[in-house]
Structure formats: C-alpha cells, structure tokens
Image (cartoon, rainbow, N blue to C red):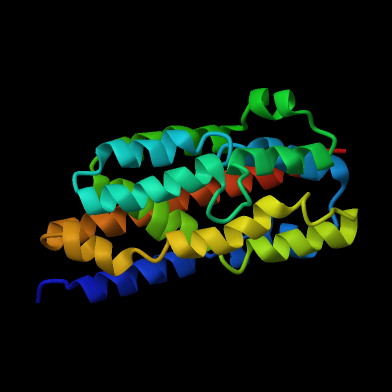
Amino acid sequence: MPKTAEETLEEVHGIVAEYAWSKQPLWQTLMNEKLTRPQIRYFATQYSVFPLHNHNYHGNLYVNCPDPSWRRRIAEVVYEEGTGRLFANDREHSKLWLLFGRALGISDQELWTAPFCAGAMAMRVYFEWICKRQFLEGVAAHMLAGEAQVPGVYGKVARNLQKHFGFTDEDVSFWDVHEIADEDHSQVGRDLLGQFAKNEADYDLVLKTVRDYSGIDALMNEDILRNMKKAA
C-alpha cells in the first residue's frame, strides 16, 4: 500500500524521538548538571552556529518558497528571528544570544568570530545547503527535525543555568523565548505534507531529510560535548 501523509508524520515523530535531545548526553548535561564557566563559554561559542547564522537558513527557505501563503508563514519566522517583535520584546534573536554571551563574559566580537569545531561547521554547511534545495527538504530539516526538538528542553536548560550561575531572566531570555517560539514554528507537519508532498517519493524524501538532519545534529552535539569536557 502507498504511504500516507499520516503514516509519514508518525515516522517523522519516531525519528525525532529516536534522536531526542533529552536522551543525548550534551543536552542531559546542560539540563541537569553543574558545568564550569569555561565549559559553558565553549558551548556558547559553538552553538552560535544557529542564532548568529540563522538568516542563512530561514532566509534561504523564504527565497526558495514557491507558494505565497507559505512564503508568508516563513516571512513571519524570519521577521521574528530578525526583529523579535512577536515573542522577544522587540529584540532580535541574535541579540538575545549575545546577551547570554555577555553574561558569560564573552564579547559580541568573540561570539561572531569564534572558530567552530568540526561538528558545528558540518552542521552549518549542511543546513545552508539543505535550505537552498527544494522547499520540501528545507522545511523538513528546519521545522520537522530541528525546531521540533526545542520545546521541553530549552526551558530546563535556562533553569539549570540560573540555578548554578545565578543568571537573570534576561541573561537566559534566548532559551525561554525559543521554548515558546519554536513550538509555534514546528507545528507545520500536516500542512507541509498536504501541500508539497505529492507522492510516496516525496514522503520518502521528507523522512530521509529528517533523519539526515537529526544525524548531523547528533554528531555536532557529540563533538561539542567532547570539546567542552576539555575546557578548564
């Protein structure tokens, strides 16, 4: 029997669960353990691959989007990332990340210019590439795989960092904003498959993309944690 959209979504959820951040050592550590300030500083430089370069991901999705209604939806995401006027009190998300860096004693320039580890660089190259391909692939990677992992994790990271480092709510506002915003962004599965997936080959492409993204993300997380442990 040909695969259906509902069956494909069930498989997507299964892949996301297989790679759940709550099961990965990096995120378990960030949510539950006390790390040294140098370790968190290292993490912040590497995780900048997302908040400081997101225009290269969401922006490519907007340019590639073939449908006006979907282009509007992506435009709202790009608008929020670039301005913060929907969820972040008029502060762009990159600025929220810079605030987190400053709380750790990292200058804005240090965050913008920090060299990435191999895992973070691989993610950056892959993510830019997949978002430049056909829209179905880019949205599957960005919203079905990536942002689907955030709700339920970022908030716990924020509370753990506040517990051990005494950060203010503003210091960890990046984490709390995305706990809300990414839940909103990731609720696109049925609409996406209903409009852009026309046949079983498209469904298979979505599943391949979600698995590929999840695998690269896991490799990045492993590499970041390995190098974090070396920090003094």
